[in-house]
Image (cartoon, rainbow, N blue to C red; front, side, top):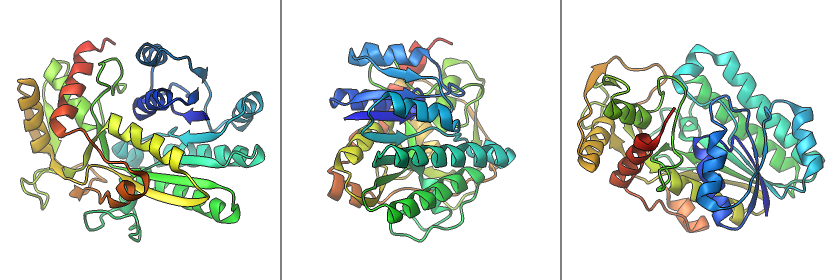
Length: 331
């Protein structure tokens, strides 16, 4: 299958490209490189020994996207392209609504024109809002607590309505939880521009001495130790979930949680990192971030039953792989 991957140079996208290539698919990557680095393509080739077709294109640019569909016979789409920082979305809502919604609209419009009917959408557990854990796919979605989550929830509704109107369209919505870790080679991983918004790269940069100490946002949540609880999933497990969903797809809408099904608090993750890598991570408790919820973890039964997919890598492996990448990474 020839698969178009939008945002394929980014953190989750690049690992999914590796998994697609290793599964025998051919890949076309589209990325505007706003929050990713072109050197990642060479590292993917180094890992897989396979070539990738690459377009530096913003997916909100309809004519540029259509040009790609004109030049290639595309069998399926995995759509990652989008802005993804919760706290930034609270500060810059218009940017998030425009980028994340228009890119989805453009892509599905062109898919319909060129009769591409396999579509995997990168959604998020944030669409559940402050629901009761564990989150189950059949839950009614609560209003999300931040604009980033809203862009994912609205995109889901758009895609579901389009699928209802097009019986041949096959849609997988993947609601994933908190991706961490890196490829076991240490060649690709999470390398955000500026100060990280996500926990693990913040931890690794403190461990490396690039940042002085970790800020833990709140210790007064109703959790075991007062810090936020999240379902951390190894990015390679997550990537393999995307391939499983793409291969499984049949007509209609299919929604899956991709997580481990277990919650880990921020302080527990810090401790696991220290144990896994024998290095201390200094931290301080600061005020909660706007848009954060207390606890978030998945019910993963459906993905196991329908896709035959389960997360295989534990929290220690996530911490070791993240640190291996950080030690190897050079700006």
